[in-house]
Image (cartoon, rainbow, N blue to C red; front, side):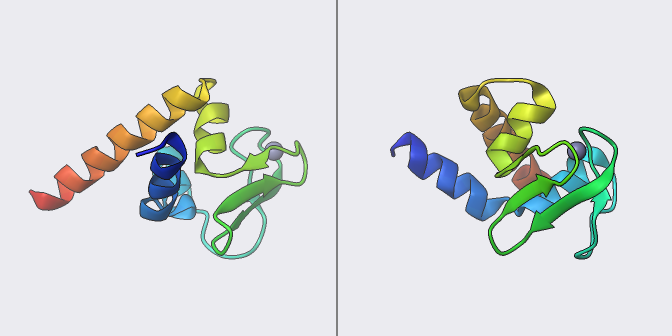
Length: 96
Ligand SMILES: [Zn+2]
């Protein structure tokens, strides 16, 4: 499997909005602008259709991998490792 296939698989299996809600413990429901996890301004939007986020204040944005890179200040590969581990953890918890 190529690296991009893994990244695409992660994006399909982990809905961005649900993931950000889980890791921040905050509510990101609805289309309105939310408090940005990075700059704390009420300018953070999530697109369920394109699976991307964008802050209209600090201009951070991107897909789930970009989110992890920003939040954990890590590399692309580390972000993917984190998401794979997260995915396995979530699935294991559901099976109990
Ligand atoms: Zn922001």
